[in-house]
Picture 1: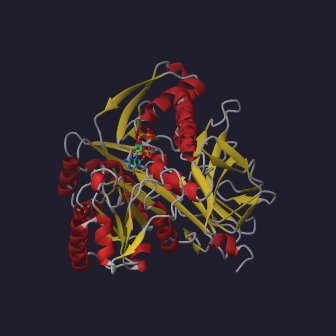
Picture 2 (picture 1 turned 60 degrees about the vertical axis):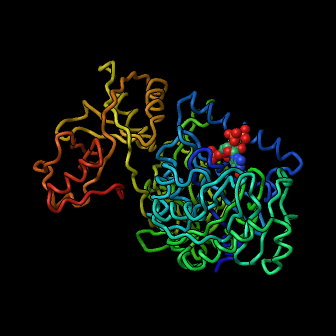
Picture 3 (picture 1 turned 90 degrees about the horizontal axis):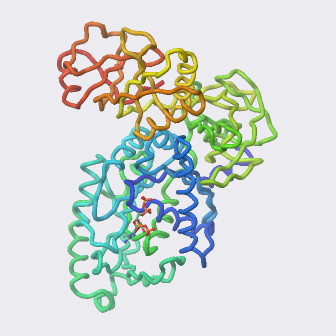
Length: 531
Ligand code: G4P
């Protein structure tokens, strides 16, 4: 045990995931309100200003054609030091969004009660499942007409394959929203929207035992329906099991309304009680315990040109163990160098704060002179180990890249390789040709613009992108057992290789994937590549 164990143990680092418009920003702002990070009286205005600031930043980034920031927010609440990793919205969705999840110890999933599980939630959720991190669900917008509660839970179970355990239960929705029933306390918290923009805490709680009073407050019909639903739920729902939650097999669910600030603080309290302290992380010398070891971190994101004036690159790292001291030297394992990290900072939207220290669980950004790659490990100079790499996520959009001026071959290759190294795009080659023809794969289409813009502006190379119809890519997991040349797929399948020479297959639809597996006995295809 180190003298900083206490600091580490009070850290909670999580990502918020949702489909756009489900209420992620609103919920995050309410969390910040409880943490005192947003000034109370000015919170409504504060919300607008905060959002303005964030979106401005993104606008600027878009204009300049660089990848969009996932910001990190840190605040204190109830003795905890909380790090929220915000993931960018839909049109900005990129591989970075996935990578951000690699830096979190748990996830909060926000679902719109009138929509249920939506496409984006599903994708991000898959990554959480792969990592087996705890997932907490907040079903939002109960102040609007919502889907049936059982249907919403069913939807999560079926669509995402995770059991649900409601911690509270909504009573009506929309105009008929009366509040929520707290299952642990066996009492009803009646709804009021008068607390909009203020801290919660004055909501009325009525124990279920005081049925007459409850009937007086929320009406006979609502009480009868609640009693009926509770009976059904007690017979059908999964029992609460903290171990299953922490293993990512069961998601605790809370209902509320982020906009009117109803049910948010209760959710936050439950969440903090059940979620985990910074988790040990796997390395080539086994799991590294956050509190038992000296400083170590891994790079999960590299962002170029955050500061227009300086054309800088920032490497974002998640501290996995020990304490970071800005004055001390660290070892960059992959680079084989011992160095001091330059300008360590905490980055919140467009605000930067230079740091002198940080602890396991925290996220820091450091100036990168072009030496770091995604997945790199930093540790104390006394140590030398590497954290397990960050998987490469499957791109969903592909284009063939052609350079306009073939004389600029060198700049073109350099530029495209550097941008790929930052992780903004993935590059592939036709299986039997050289670098003349490059296929680019991206997770979100915005990255195509980013590539074009950056090649023109930073490398002075003009390109033309020709969209390809592929939507799925698969790595060949058992590539040593398979003869790629003889592999027979559907006519629209394409064989390519990545920059390391690994063979991959591109498909137009999922039906072709199934056909190819059927036709080639023993072929094992993977959706992620573990580097
Ligand atoms: P996102 O980050 O997940 O994309 O969603 P965001 O919080 O921006 O919310 C999307 C819209 O939904 C916003 O409305 C927001 O006010 C609204 N909203 C969020 N939570 C609730 C809720 O609990 N109840 C209701 N009724 N609405 C909610 P907007 O009109 O797009 O923006 P604004 O003008 O309100 O800022």
